[in-house]
Length: 312
Image (cartoon, one colour):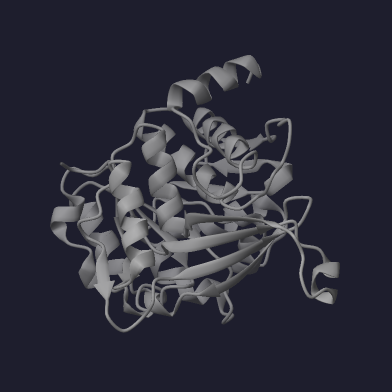
């Protein structure tokens, strides 16, 4: 069975800890809430898109350990294709400790050495046959796929008439634009966060960012701006989308990945640029109201009803 969305990138075990304050480090012991959840950009996008009704597939690496088995079982239980997940005997399954402040902001401690093994050869023609979108998530954390390493897979995707999408994480090495420039020429949908887009383009105005990136032939450029909403353009039309009001913000972990899952889902469902961005914003609104990057996204019908009630 072919997937609608094939994601490539990080899949980790998230250990969420809340609330974390500065005083925590002045005590021997503090009572906090902890939750063990799947995480990592590629994993989050696949799980949340599957909740919205998409058939999804994850291409990543896990360790030959109990954490890897738990992650694969979690995906299998939700009907996500895990057949292209590689098992490493050298590294442990990726893990992140997510420290969440009372206001929902988060800080990560991560062990992601295993993703040194994730290579473009792992993406096979059979992964793309019948797919709608190939999405590279976790850009800047994938040594063999960054710096143009993903290009052969993106070229193969276009040979199969599969659209390509790319999202980024924080780049610890510098040379922001240079490291993704080769891939940008083969990217249809580019959805970085505002902070990352500033580093990539050298611009602080989102419209100026779009003008700078247009040279690469991107079809859709979007910027996730957190509590400020989002900006999207297809270089003919552009929209600023305010965020949806929510009753509470439990945490912001995975909100950007939920936005990506929502946007790609909306595109596959045939929605226009504006409708896709609104749908993506609504999906993200569900995630920030729950603990963890996954598990809070409902069906597409529920999301659409939420949008109607908000008169958007």
